[in-house]
Length: 475
Ligand code: NAD
Image (cartoon, rainbow, N blue to C red; front, side, top):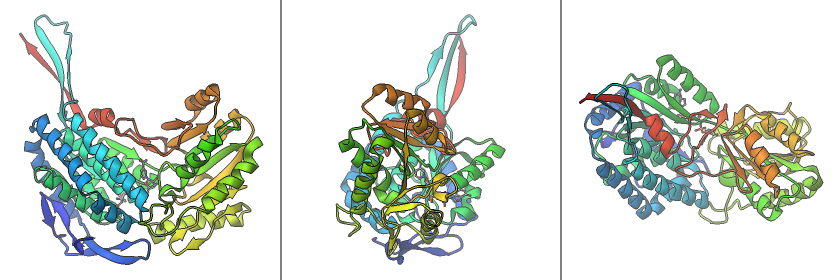
């Protein structure tokens, strides 16, 4: 980290918090203080929103070529400063370097794909029944968008939840996770260097539980895009419902992965491992439920546990490290609680279950029952349960026995089984013969049931972040 104290970013510059208070940003590996960040207040939120609203008055009229240029430049700067962003992701949120590099690469593609959105918000002409009337509809940006991001992928979500709205002519106030304010601040500097006009991208850091409602309910905020837990997401949805304000919600998951007996295990094994253990399981799409057809169950569990038990837990800057620290005491308590509850209620811990400092060993459970917390709840750690099943019907019933519906997957060589699973699993995203952690800029990314509302993606964001205006001209 280059500086020790990070203010808010409002109107293209560093702005100290109105209260003068800062909070400690800690390295999750050792819980040592890395820096301090501005503790935002409602006054800071109001200032940022009013600044973004002011900036919108002129930014909405910028030409597509200008917004396109800024996003292409942002991608170039991120490529140039890749190592700087990787360092922040490693130090601030305990990303193993491989995951940090993955985030940077994704963010570059998000900037590049958003550049094309500046030209894609097209309208249409409409045949009219009125003689001599020319009828058309055009799109306009909607104004200030609040972007609220989680701790686990602060660059992926920080870039996506800002570049798409900005490419469409909107302005943004971002409230990053209190665990990752430095990354958001650095993103603001990147936009400034890319030539983004002052006030178009603003960051207010602080305790979301204290100041979040002020942001969501500010009358000048026209839309909220939120990525985070189901609990906070539902609260935001309720507030937005009362205010008649649109919200896109990307929430948690308990994603199922099915391995049929005919699966190519040379692909299914690494796919399953990656699907749950990347970034020590702190990924929304993580395969925290793995269903394996009974004929191959014992062999699969044995091999899976052996691979899991050997995943790298060394230096975060070593390419072979997969498992880093769990981000905070609150999150560690939940992961520990789920493992202990399962242990107490009779589950078998095939591997893992213990801690090395703030790192939880990759943990594989069998014999998990619905009475255990880990059965239905999101653990958000390197913990998965493996269950046997006999038929595809059963695999579908188990997969759908969840309030969540974010990602899902099946490994099989039988196309008919694969397509039945694709159609019948209750999930916003489903992958056949591939890892269930996957994201790209142009896909409709998101979940059903408690996993969210609305989708992210270039086309989806054009729909959500512009509004239609119907226009007629009497000739
Ligand atoms: P969280 O819900 O605790 O926090 C997310 C953000 O919400 C933070 O910035 C926090 O400050 C803010 N917040 C808290 N109260 C608020 C309020 N009243 N109003 C507005 N904002 C408020 O989530 P987290 O622990 O940072 O992230 C983990 C969760 O995010 C997991 O459930 C994970 O599955 C989910 N997630 C989902 C996706 C997805 O795309 N579906 C991606 C990443 C993470």
